[in-house]
Length: 139
Image (cartoon, rainbow, N blue to C red; front, top):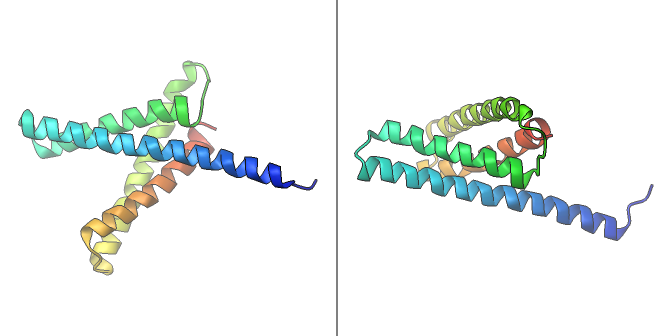
């Protein structure tokens, strides 16, 4: 079977749309994370560690809902949602471990600036999460 130019264009457009949605969800998650962190830490006086846990948790919850319903258009029954949530959590934990190791290597071994390292590991996390969600969680 030979792929025509229109077939390739349609395939590329679909993938680009999918990645764009995923990226928009990621930006939203980051904004929610920072907003919850700032409100809980600065306005409510919650310890910064607990504020970080709260911010990250709200970002992950938002990520699950938007990625399930919008990015990956998952229409499975609610009985599957608990299973997906467990898988989603596993992907996020794996991503967190990968990024922590990568950041340690970049900062300690390569003497890279902390904030440049943070941007790089954020990109690594995006790729890890996208693959995990697409291939395992919402497949």
